[in-house]
Structure formats: C-alpha cells, structure tokens
Amino acid sequence: MKTRIAEKFQTLFGCEGEFYASAGRINLIGEHTDYNGGYVFPGAIDKGIIAEIALNGTDKVCAFSLDLDEYVEFGLNEEDKPAQSWACYIFGVCRETIKRGGKVAGFNTVFAGDVPLGAGLSSSAALESTFAFALNELNANGIDRFELAKIGQSTEHNYCGVKCGIMDQFASCFGKEGALIRLNCKTLEYKYFPFNPKGYKLVLIDSCVKHELASSAYNKRRQSCENAAAAIRKNHPEVEFLSDAKRLWLDEVRAEIPQEDFLRAEYVIGEVQRVLDVCDALERDDYETVGEMMYQTHFGLSKLYEVSCPELDYLNKLARKMDVTGSRVMGGGFGGCTINLVKDELYKDFVDTAVASFTEKFGHAPKVYDVVISDGARKLQ
Ligand code: GLA
Image (cartoon, rainbow, N blue to C red; front, side, top):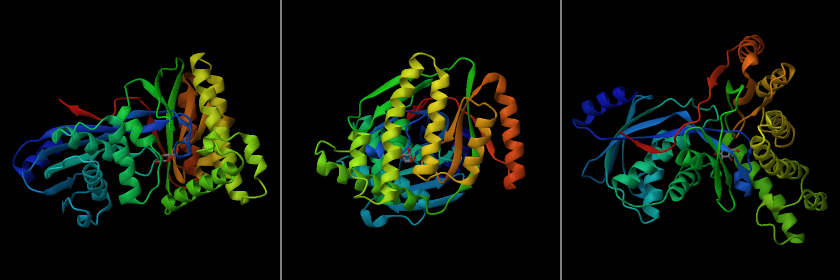
C-alpha cells in the first residue's frame, strides 16, 4: 500500500512527503455507552489508513484518494467544504484543528486504506486520526492525543452529521499493539489491558449489510438516551449522563417517558455494568464470563436498542448453537460485523459453517476478518 501511495504521490506532485498512519478499531464490549458517559473497551486493529503528506506552501489542500481514484482540492475556510464525503473528513479535521487555535498550512496528500467500509470498524475514525495526528506534527501545534481524538469526533459532529461518542477516535489515537483499552468516557480515565487469550481467537464476521439512514437512526438513539437521563435527573440531580443512573431510578420514570426511550436506557444501564464485569473476568482469565456478557450485549442491542438486523441476529444465533464462547453485533450496528470469541479448536468449523449457511440463507457471502490488536496513530519511518 505504501509503495502504491508513494508512486502516485510522485506522479501527482513530483516530490516526496512524510508517511502517517492510523487504525480502525474493534470493541470487545461497551456499545453505545460512550455518549452516555459510560465505559468502552476498544482496541486498534491491523487495518487502517496510510497517508503521504507534504506541506505545499499554499493555503490549499490537494488530496487524492487512491481507493476511490478521485482528486479533490479545497481551501481551509469554513465556506470551502468539499462536496465529496471522504474529503469532508479531511476538511473537518483541518477546520477543527484551526478552531482549537492550531495552524494548518496547505498540503498535498495521497492516502489509501484497508479498513472495510461500512463494517463497523471505524474507517472514518482511522482517516480522521491519521490527519489529526499528521497535521499536528507537520504544523508543530503541540495538541495532545485526547484533543486529537476530539478533533476527529467534532469532525463527525460538525461536518459529517453523526453525533458520535469518543470511542472510535480514542481507540485509533491511543491504540497499542496487544492491548485493549478501557476508557471511562465521563472522566476520560483509561487503562490498558493486555489481551492475548490463550486458547481463543477473536474473529469478525461481516454481514456486508450496510443500512442507509444509519446516521439518523444513531442520532435518534442518542436523543432517546438524553431524554431518559433528563427525566431521571429531575429526581436525581446528580445524574449528569445516563450512565450515572441506577436501574431503579429508570423504573421510577417509566410512566413519564416513551416506551422506546425506556428500552434504550434499560440497555445502556445494563451495558455499563457489563464492561466492568468483563474487565474483572479478564483479570481472572475467565473467558466464559466474557463470552456470556457478549451474548447479553447482543440481546440488548437487538431487542432493546434495536440496532441489529436479521443477518446479524442469524450469525449470533448460529454462534450460540455452535457453542462459540461469545458473540455479538459490534460497533454502531445497523449492519456490519459480529465479533466472536471462539475456542481455537472450534474456530475452523465455526467460520466454515457460518460462511456456508449465511451464504445459503442470504444469497451473498459474509467476509471473515481475524483480528490483530495493533498500534493506532503514528508516523511511519
Ligand atoms: C459508533 C460511534 C461510537 C460508538 C459506537 C457504538 O462507532 O462512532 O462513538 O457510539 O458507534 O458503541
């Protein structure tokens, strides 16, 4: 990938730049908890974005997406927002850096990636953090990694229409080889957990389904959670985020809020606790508990949060039937992957069966990705 980028960069711009990279992410557990001030438990993966970048002495960005074979130029003022959605991520990162007092000089770039799009592996966060990290270095802005993650998150909010939490950008800015990271999204405290379960593999099965309108459905979930938190806050002013609420407090407002908001909140309150339970279980090498929590999360995401789909429910059911240790829909939902914790000896049989029976039922083959927990945003030598 790096060689192809370098060739194109040389052809387009006649010079060489610096190489930067960042990664997509998985999340073991803790879904839709980030914007509720709860815990998440992600890690960066060995699939990401690589960009070659060089300052060009102008006030323009000249960007080429190798994967889409498309070239775009844009200025750095608010009114210069490009029409292409991929370019909006880069533009947004520039704008959010500038809004924070950072300098962004014009630059040339060619980039490419291998994070499958729409699979729930945060290709967009990988793109945002590659550029947030690179522009910070190239312009010597001295912005810290948390703020770089927030630059990516604000890009989603202000330039891409998704009111996402901080998990994806955090994971791609803070990812470390071999470690998952538990992040408290309220206090932003985090802890690395070495993750190398002996006798198990993590495998993703990508349904290759991507639902349109996923971002408005996502924003709607977030709104429901905020409504529920506001209702609870009337009785319990200490509730800043939904994750601060006890289950009992939610029951108190059941009659006052729409049933839909109640169900969404019920899921979130359960999920916040499950992340903690999984971290405890990992410290005891108790993978059976980890797996059981994953199944509970899937149930919640499917029946209470309603972000699963028939394809993902099917994969989850099949995993259960085959005695896979843990399985659940991963990421925002509305299509994408299941993440599965599988015993080594079951791995081949599970993957073969899942691919064959899914293909027979839905008429297209799912994709299978083995997960390697890797480094996040960095400069390449
Ligand atoms: C998307 C968002 C994240 C998070 C997950 C669900 O990936 O970008 O902030 O909310 O969905 O856990």
